[in-house]
Amino acid sequence: MSNEITSAPAPTEAPAYEVRSSPAHDDLSHTAGSLPTLQAVYETLFTKDGWLGDYDYGFLCMPTIPCMNRKSARQPPFFGLKTKLPALLALVMGFQHALAMIAGVVTPVLIMSGPGTGNMNLDTATRSYMLSASLISSGILSLIQITRFRIFSTKYYIGTGLLSVVGTSFNFVPTFGAMTTRMYLTGQCPTGLAPDGVTPVQLPCPEAWGAFLGTCMLCSLIEILLSFLPPRIMKNLFPPVVTGVTVFLIGAKLIGTGLTQWAGGSGPCSAMPAEGFFSVCPNLGAPNAAPWASPQWIGLGFLVFMTIMFVEFFGSPFMRNAQVVIGLVVGLIVAAATGYADVSTLDSAPTVTFLWVKNFSTFPLSIYAPAIIPLLVTYILTMVEAIGDVTASCEVSRLAVEGREFESRIQGGVLADGLGGFLSAVMTNSPMSVFAQNNGIIALTRCANASAGYMCCLFLILMGIFSKFGTLFLMIPDSVLGGMTTFLFANVASSGMRILAFLKWTRRDRFIVSAAISLGLGVSLIPNALTHFVSYTGTSTVLQGLADSANIILSTGFCVGAIIAIILNQLLPEDRPEAKEEEIAEGVRQADTKMAAKIAAEMEEAASGEKADMKHL
Image (cartoon, rainbow, N blue to C red):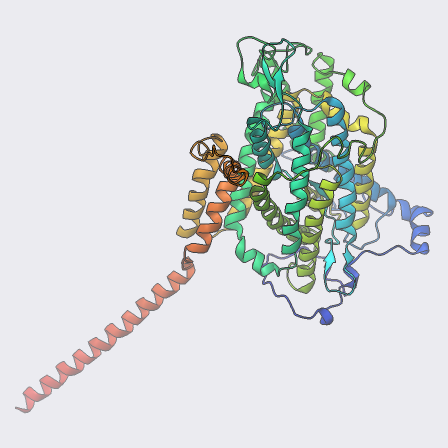
């Protein structure tokens, strides 16, 4: 029997995780995917009701007018996970989810493949392929999460069986930046001179991508293995005080990257040299080049940012779900009209592409040992974040957030997340994980149906196959991208704040958060502050690798913060909850009152006895 309910979920306490030794008492077959019957296909594709239903399509297109009371407006019906959904509505809802996902899917690849310190400085053709590969990988891995498969003859599943869309994880961007910076410093990535023959630059380093992918394949095994642990144990090891701090630090680091792009770009021009090839952004040969932080760069980014604000205030539900993409489109139109966009990039891109057009001959596969420990930490964080995202998906889908079925969805989601980290690297893409963006769309549109998820996967795959779509992002000026990514990364930081908001903020919680943020945020602001005293000049490759690994960790703020939070959480004793303290204090007061009354009664009795004795005398 399904756990789906039709009314809004009531507030619940923290789920009490309980893993039963035998699943025989719970039939979870209804949570796995199944093929539709021929009758269902016919009714969906060849009848008016199957295409349109009775949905209020005007709800999606009606703009929002502030200060007007719309409480009396009719709400559309809620479409649950297995509810029959009209075909047109499935297409519309799937397209909404795809639009909401695009920016999150391509942004990490845009940053890691682009120019600047900590990035690979790749050519346009390679970057175009990587963007297409990220969209295709997102669609394929989302299919696995949504469909949900049972591992043969076991109680374990792969996938959540929910409308869980998968995208490129932002968690790996800081780790990759620290790793690539180290590879350039040690000569594993090449350096050279700019076209002016004078300015030193970092040359393209596809080897860094191959080393990153190979190391990710290895480290993804930890998330796969941990997925078989009971959720109770994972929650105890990585409670909100740990994950909230870590997610906040990731967002804080990325906000700096976004703002650097907003001001003109994160390439060599961001150092603001007085002369030379990079004295202007992006370089001397670019159209309408200008110094970093010039008014025109700030203005283009601000246009995107304000467009996002405008859509939030006045846009219809459909527009609000695609507000980031709308902001990018407006910024691109203005940039192209004013001569800041390079249209030749789009003309030179192939019409179609697919995975492995550029394979491991372009990105030589290897293991970069110094990055193993930081990536293990990142995968563990990604796993805990996935647990939270799956829980949120269950809540907005109006499914139970406790019990055997919920635990099974958590287990399947984390396992699919770990496999996704491995398979995305096989697909030449950065590790992917469950995204939380689609939960907001589910809540707003009241549609948690799997059919919409399948349509979203279809749109993502098609966007990736037609590579000119991905190439559009390469012709957008960095300042336009920065206006979008700064807002997007702030959402990551606010997600960490939201996790921390669930704490009781005892003295212990405040101490752990303060200690973790003090060094974690400090390292995010000044990445090299802790790396100068860890060095090795000998000939041992093992010791050199350990020194490099330590430097990567010490230059990655969220790694430092996560390690501090994990250690303190295990060592510091739990505080008494304030309510318990009040209860104990009240008990003490009552006991004191009773004791005082008893002593007074005894004293009065003693006094009465003395008076009687005196009278007798």
